[in-house]
Length: 561
Image 1: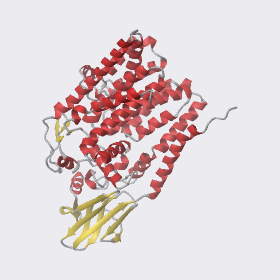
Image 2: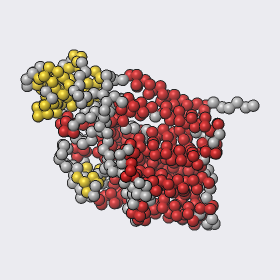
Image 3: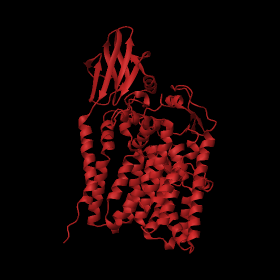
Image 4: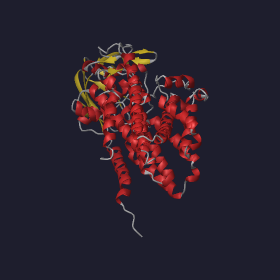
């Protein structure tokens, strides 16, 4: 700690700078997935308030219908943001502080990952950490796309590829296992993207492997499976329980390389590589002969992923295949961004080492830091300027209202106070991973209306009070009713229903919506709870086994011969 205290202080300051231009307004600036992920954070926050650590269903948010979306998406990032909110309380402030903490974590992980590969290159580690963590691409994922899952993947990519380096060179495997675990607990598609990259590197380095390394790789895989069981076990369970509504898919179109290159040169970053990464690519071409084998591999794999993400690759032929779930080929660009920034840092530190005067070297690092900070602030200013005059969410959201506007295909609204935040936590037009049903039925149930006698035009309001993995519902029947479909879905046989204080058999309609039969006239109280002790115990055992597998080698000292 004494050795790295200066870096720690700088990283803390840089973390504040990384959100400052947005944070100072105390507003939420619209992001493509901002409402969705804020509702997930709010769901986790409310569960933690009740002492519930691993919710399977969304009952406080996401239309309060008991959606399994909390199980179908990794929850890793939610714990950070919800944990910060437990301390800060204010949801807007906690969102920005959460991003500060995430940036600080990215700086530390990047520094440690680089330094573990090049132990004597402290300058390169600093350059890499700052350039990678404060990039305009990170601003894009934090505040334009507002996808905390991808943002967390970016944090741990350096750990994964540093871990791969240690495995392929010396057989060490725990860093690789921990990095992959964190990605598995952050974002589903990025798991597959990272695995593809690792397989490519492994094919290139196949001659470097031996029996011990393969055994250690199997250990890394086993640890990852164990530690990520809190995601994949519930996801598999709910994903195989009913026919679900899949996330919306888009046409597969590769990027325009010229357009993205100009974006890097002008710091007009969308989802592409940045100016530093582009400079690293150019520097690698110039210094190619002096690059290490590992750096050359990074160079060529990076080029491969740039081509893969571009219109040079015939994406249209895969439109009607499972690859359509990728949605956007520019997702691959997080890998060239990482690799080319690493090359920039390696070559840059080597060039700086040739400067004989220490003051000049320090001055060069200071100038570099100011440039990176300036680019980060410029990217933040772009988000602010785009949204500054956007309408505020002053009323409750409801279906087909067009209250959330789009400009140039980008969500365009502002949240400036607590009442507006509550509006944002209301209706969300996302049916992902609910049982398949007509969208009109989804919208009606989302507005907390019960459908009477399977007739959508006959609806009665339902009052809800959410609890972890369950809810309390109250409604009034003005006459005896043959059936009432309540705004809550059922996935499996692990639900308990109480009606007016008495056990009630769990029944559903054809769309897996909780349905009551032969309801008498009057006021009724319904409590629904979900409990799957076997799944919870299995997750706990596997996670504990994974922790032991990580820690055990550190406690067992090899015997001296």
